[in-house]
Image (cartoon, rainbow, N blue to C red):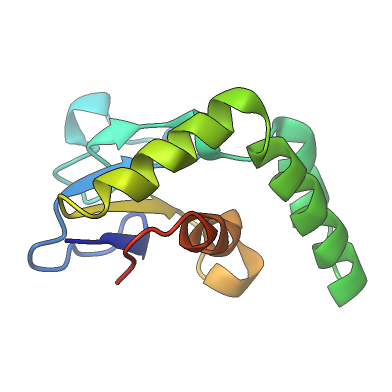
Length: 128
């Protein structure tokens, strides 16, 4: 049992389980009834996405220092009560069921899902 960190909109891996979208906005131009069948997500959990201000900061990050500033701010946001509790829950569930969390970004190293991977790992999550 484990969590997969995925790019939303890509084909699902065998045994991936429930796909959770940790994004601020649903996919554009896709009817809600087709989110799962088009491999975006089964459940939307925007609580684990950066705030609108942080999304803008990430999009404008050009240097490693800019990205690190975003990462620090996003980590601080994820330490807030509600997000922290959701991360604790997902880490615990990773030991009993397969599921995935993801975002649309192409490069996980320049995406909040890479930071989510770290945060979940710090909580003892089983990650594939």
